[in-house]
Image (cartoon, rainbow, N blue to C red; front, top):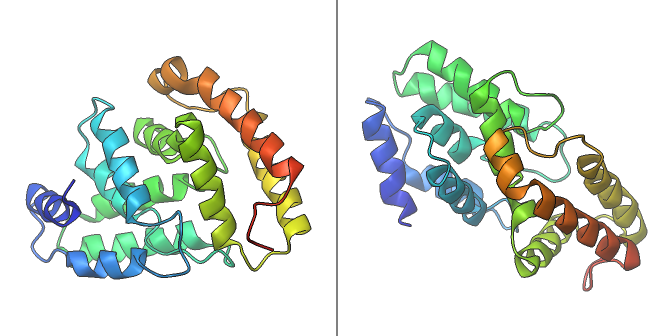
Length: 208
């Protein structure tokens, strides 16, 4: 997937007059503090979106921008990403209603509340599609998350990470949309149990 061309095509499809340069995105997602929350994650999200059967360019834009600001020491990454998304949309001379919708979808990736609409439900599911990946990808993902939190001592990381993963597993339904539940729910839950056991057994090697 050529991400630069895809970003430009999205701007053209939305009839944006002043589209943010792809280089601005690339620079943000290439921050060395990142290991999982990179353009590779965005590409995985876009592939999941392509396979969803849904055509919603505002959802696609929200996927591009949902991690545009990321600092593992901060607790407001999604809120700051939503505000940046809102600013870029208005600077592109697109409708304020679009800015509101995209910002709401970005905020939905906090995973702190049930979605308000189908767009928010799908972006939440796409953001968690990693849990339905292969076991090898799952372990790579965990190493990448550990890398981003390398500043956290191993024992503290293990406790906190287990709490996050167990929180997802404790949901009555991991995925919000019927399609994701039918296709991936059972497998993703098995993967989560495997990942929780791996985190509990030992800290991820090479960190902490």
